[in-house]
Image 1 (cartoon, rainbow, N blue to C red):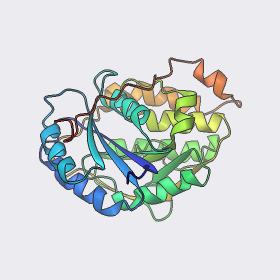
Image 2 (cartoon, rainbow, N blue to C red; image 1 turned 30 degrees about the vertical axis):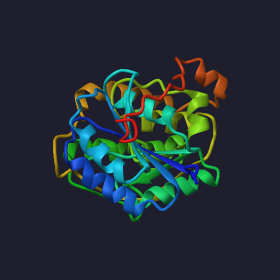
Image 3 (cartoon, helix red, strand yellow; image 1 turned 45 degrees about the vertical axis):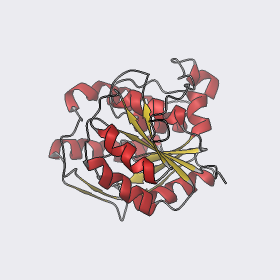
Image 4 (tube, rainbow, N blue to C red; image 1 turned 180 degrees about the vertical axis):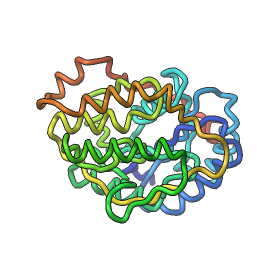
Amino acid sequence: MTITPRVSVVIPVYNEGESIVRCLDRILREVLLPAEVLVVHDMPEDTTVPYAQEVARTDPRVRTVLNTYGRGPANAIRFGIDSAVAPVAVVTMADGSDDPRQIDDLARLVDRGVVVAAASRYMPGGQQVGGPRLKRMMSRWAGRTLHWFARVGTRDATNSFKAYDTEFVREVGIESRTGFEIGLELTAKASRMRLPVAEIPTIWLDRQLGESRFDLGRFMPSYLKWYFFAFGRRLTAEQLSRRGPVSPVPTLEKESSASG
């Protein structure tokens, strides 16, 4: 009997190689809700793919998905959310920085009615361990000021580890095309629509394997755009969707063990 997923876990990857196995093992062990785990890659030759497909051979919840929206983390996340079968999509990184035990809790918050549920490093009980000092300071400052003055519903609007109501995402669309600013974009849009955003504390650990793809200089303009967008009058979904192209729901190109 096929069980319909209640949560789609979206993992953008780029040449993670064998390290993806540990990431997937932790997610599959800790996520108790009916789930699908989408390993979203930009190119068929990505080194992550054969290792993820090996895991998929023993656990049908996992499948590799080829992103056709264009290269880069923003496009991979866009494609992953559009490919999600479940009503809730949780975006998490492949580097082990996020705590997979919290995926169920984030998904349940969305199930209860919030459109964005954030794992927060900056609320009481949260913590950030490691990472570049300047990036930490800027992220914390942005989170606090958005919480205080724009009332966005979370102290950590820039964290990528979030759960989303997939219907909400498809309604307002995703404009980001650069990096990891999607989390801030969707939080800002929810705030402008006066829709509920919630948070739970998390402990974020800087990645131990591989190299980060975060380029502060390159991504900063996009972050600033959405930071300032969070301040403003109430907008409707129709007004938001007119701002940019809404991602079409893709025809899935599955590369799971069943098809390979």
